[in-house]
Length: 227
Image 1 (tube, rainbow, N blue to C red):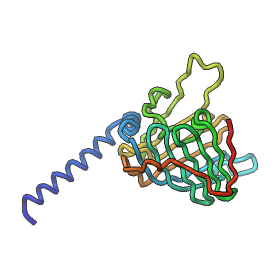
Image 2 (tube, helix red, strand yellow):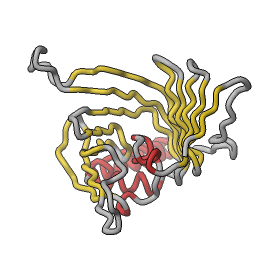
Image 3 (cartoon, rainbow, N blue to C red):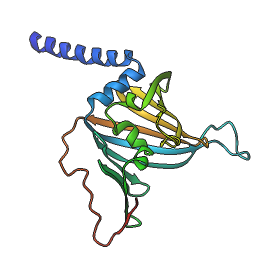
Image 4 (tube, rainbow, N blue to C red):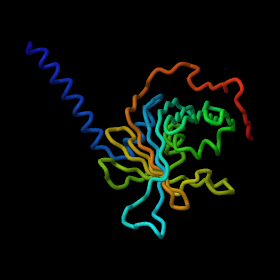
């Protein structure tokens, strides 16, 4: 192999490895901010698990128990557009088109439309894919390193003009980062239940057609419109 070509290959490899090393040297919050700032579109796969603590009559040394698991594919485009496409064990799509949130259930042949807002805020997908600046709504606090990830805790900022409690149903939100990409989300509610979402095969800044987030219910489907 010519020396010039070898040198070029080594130079490219050096750049790639140095970028990965720099990414890992950054804190989890720095990686998360860069991901949100630099990812205009993306797609990948997900596995979502609903976890709960063992009941009194169950072994206490087994840790959290998986009570439900789904998996599928996600696509997003900032700001506020995403598709959370559950494929197993049933087919269901959650679609945010920038104005409304649509739940399509294939088994029920039913589409539910509701305005974006509180409904959108309660979805795990919106936390990562909805806003272009997390710092506007959350305080980011670096946590421990575990499972090979740098974890970041997101604490919702208090709105001095808000009369009620936060729209978010979660009391604790954590995101695990690896090499500049989010690998996992942990969402804990007030009852101690945990939603764990792991992400894989993420492709950043992909070209998406203009109608990618447009949804029309099939003929004969039941359509519900909620205010």
